[in-house]
Length: 112
Image (cartoon, rainbow, N blue to C red; front, side, top):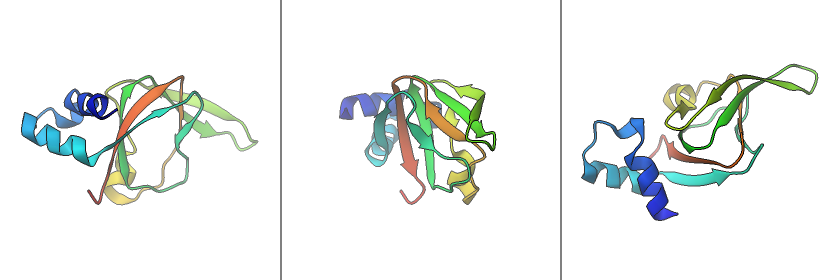
């Protein structure tokens, strides 16, 4: 997974302005993971300090309808960012992100 993680970071829009050495440092700071279909990456109303980048697969951006159901309002694809407002200023997530099939993401914690 380490090489795959480094590749995820190297090709991310997040690092477009970095040189190879800086990209390598960043690859050591992030957490890479694979989500299974339907797995929740972040939940509406929660606060987190992580920025996520979709490397492969997709995430459904969903909102709670209030009666136990949810509706898809957008789909995030590879190279898209997620959780950026919470990463920057502890803003509550306005939606829940659910994996659409196997989905690879890398995440950077604010404190790193």
